[in-house]
Length: 476
Image 1 (cartoon, helix red, strand yellow):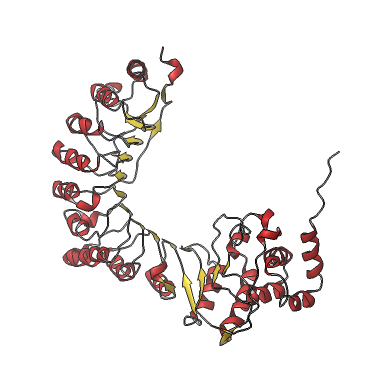
Image 2 (cartoon, rainbow, N blue to C red):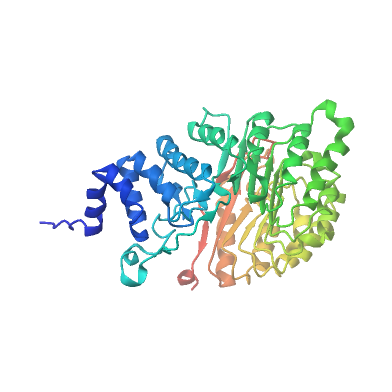
């Protein structure tokens, strides 16, 4: 028979106090500060709105991580918290006990308790007590910060977000609405502009735009992007060019790329299908202000000149992640990619050249420099037209890369008939040959061979076979 753990005395005390909500609110003035978090959690779970409002107004800590309690946004709880904030904002001087500076509505996944005072079992220990100064001097009011992650999409209206933005619109002076992560999915630019007008743009650190925007729309967004000077992560996808925009293409590209002069902290840049940069990539590269850790330019045409500028850009020489998947390199000089990899060999950890249309001569040109990428963890080169000899050469030259843990290769050309049909019997023979090579090399490895039809833009089909395993205990 199991024995249930009895409720802790603290839990019983806060439940008892909240049975009389008026008494609980009156007790806040003299309640020890360390009892605020457990009382707040109980009021939250029990739906005691008046107590929540009063506790927000009297919160004796600088940070209230309300989002950590909400698995899903709860509008009524939000209203109660904002009612408490409204009382604070209306007061010319702060109440003696109130220390609240930040209301955090983000669901960070962190435990509510650990975010304010450390592990739960220390909250009521003698050394863990948190005291509030007894000084009765009135404190000058400072702007309150409300932190939230914004995701703008065309789905059904988000009542939580709608209420928050409506509330913040009339309190811009004493309130700073701060957003660190901004995601935009298929919403009109006018909606984006209305939201960004309420947000402290210099707080934003990560921006993801996945919209079918025209180049002129990107131009309108660019003026906001330039104000996000603390952005570290930027992802743009599916920007397309209208026929009537062709004449002003250079102007739009310049309007976008010049914003990178202001992005002094950018580390990771992802661009999906940025066809407007074909032949103009240098305009963006020369505006970079800091060394990038990640550069992903995928599924778009580039010129040989663009590749030359990539290899010569000083702010790409510390790259950890390079992804050029879907960039057609067919017919490019083999030395161009080799020169780029030479510049990043010391730091490169992840390299993706999937569906680049490369042939044996181009891959063989980069094999020597790949063998010097000692930090390399993943290598993706599937979807290219390679012979079994080239795949074997890749396996041998990368054998000493101790960090390499994920390798994606194409099924060699010899796996297919003259008509392009996959011959499973021949593929099985090649797999056996490659397994033998891995065993001879004497290093534990797992590689994947992939079969796919030649990729067409927007219609990639990819079939993974079982991996070829070569564990240490099977080397004998």
